[in-house]
Length: 78
Image 1 (cartoon, rainbow, N blue to C red):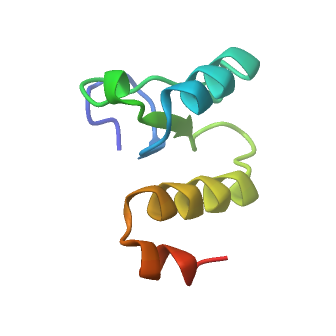
Image 2 (image 1 turned 120 degrees about the vertical axis):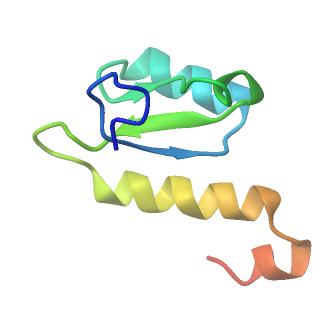
């Protein structure tokens, strides 16, 4: 919640650099590269806009977990 004093409320998660770049390029109002962890592929999604897309948040959470979780646990998430 406004962690860096930038006025943004956002969700931040692990992603690939390719996905991060695509999301930011396609919708720069919603997605941005977060400070410190952004160069490692993390992406942030603004939640303080008039309409947050919670399906997209869920999808990002699922993919982030599957990327870092042990293989057996990642396989349990659909």
